[in-house]
Length: 65
Image (cartoon, rainbow, N blue to C red; front, side, top):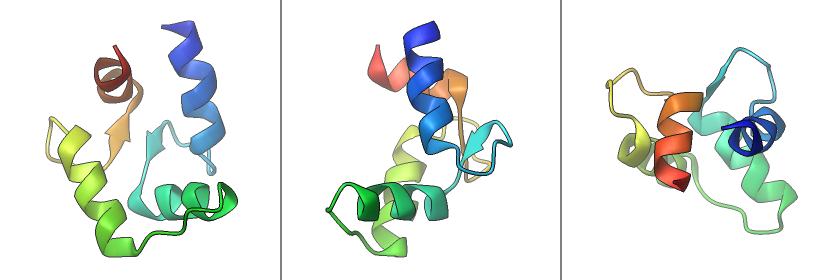
């Protein structure tokens, strides 16, 4: 899971151990593929298995694996 953790850490801008829709928006802007907050929230919801509105490292790893 360490490869996932490195990538996760790059996206987790505030280093709280979770990826928010806002962090996803910022990532996509940096990548030159801007998305709306609503699109980011929908993306987070697809990966968010516990319903807290955030993506944990475990949820992120399950998605990438």
